[in-house]
Length: 494
Length: 95
Image 1 (tube, rainbow over the protein chains, first blue to last red):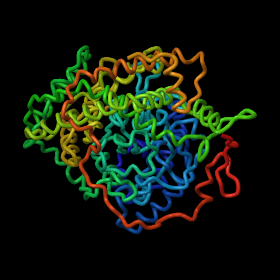
Image 2 (cartoon, rainbow over the protein chains, first blue to last red):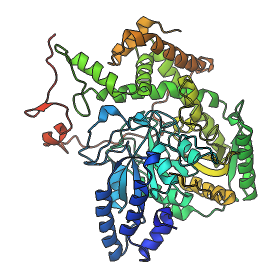
Image 3 (cartoon, rainbow over the protein chains, first blue to last red):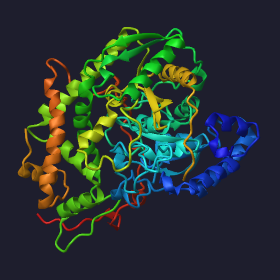
Image 4 (tube, each protein chain N blue to C red):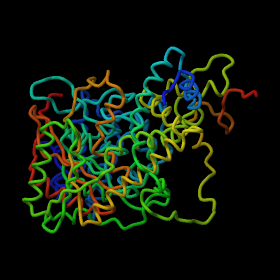
């Protein structure tokens, strides 16, 4: 087994025990990254930074009392601003942008000794479910359908993060999740991904898509690794007014796997019409596993589930149209080449027309429309009222004593890259049908790989927790992970 | 509610995104598909329901109104496509 295949927990113990060095571990990952260009997971590689950080980590490890992440090589989603390192959100409009500052989440990771291998590919501005909207090109899922060579999507928008972790290019990665962008790619690649409660991780320095929905979270090889990473990423930050001033529990210490006193809800509205048998069976298996582990299973109702996606596709584009107004060709990124006589208006319009990809333009324009005079109440305010109702559904379920809610993570396994090219945009949006409710309600949600479909592709289940109860949620996920005993890896073809 | 070409053109302009005349019909079609999907929200009874302003109930913190950063114009300008003499430069604005 080569070092890049270790989990974070295993590597931490070996680093502390002096069995391996951070430089050796980092070199193994850098070599894996170099050999994996076919996956296109890394958009910007930073081997010099990685090796310098690894050397520092080794010194710190030698001195003793090093934090959990000291010397652990990670991939960083391109949405995170990293000082002096290209940070483009997968967009052409940010060509050449090198932030003068570090996002709070990455600063915390590096302060704890984590090593950055590079920046990970993603859907442009995190808008997409297949990693096909990136200016860097598609990310390819390391998983294939048996011997079929068709290139599959790793999901999106954190597709580079998912592919990199699944292919053992790094030990863990950062992701962000606005409607499912951590959990859906995690499910498509057989890894664990958690979106914490809104406000758990600082959004400062993370390029904004929809500010009331965006949250950062870890993508990892196991629930334990996700717990370790989340602990390092979370915490109050005065630079983000929506960041919660709450203590961060020791998430790893919470992993007991004992869920005998827990009540797990199964929401009937998530049984969608036309849901594939395999997803239905996976969900049923998960229910049985948690029941066998001693949890009480109850059927619950979340009546407004059906309206979550339409509400999301008002609120997220509305916020995006406002957040992305800053890309105007003046302060950062690229400016379009102007013709003789062009004024500022032409500069804005040309810069944004050539800098944004089609999906981003579509969402900015839909957002502009729903916020425009005469439609604000009919669309935006109505969607925000529906959002209140969606959150209330969850509050009522929790008030009945439900500790966590079990649902499928995605409506299907990974699909072929290009297969949605002729579909209308709404078909792609349906990928987030099980995950988007969680963002609208601000709750924590975790995707855990629990099975394979007929063609050998991974499938995941989602657990949704109470606000701020990530520790309990991770523990339930730990019990599910143990019961499912997934253990599959993609065969290396790249 | 259906978006016509004129509305599509107006929205593109409001969003400051240049869209050529030949691309407008496809854009209007896409708007109509997405808005058709959104129309489902009209089925929901939202009478007496407050629009959500904050997903996690929290009071915004107050802080003293003090200058805590600044004095680094060069760093602010370092990523500008065109910066001159300490300023962002843009094409001439003549109204």
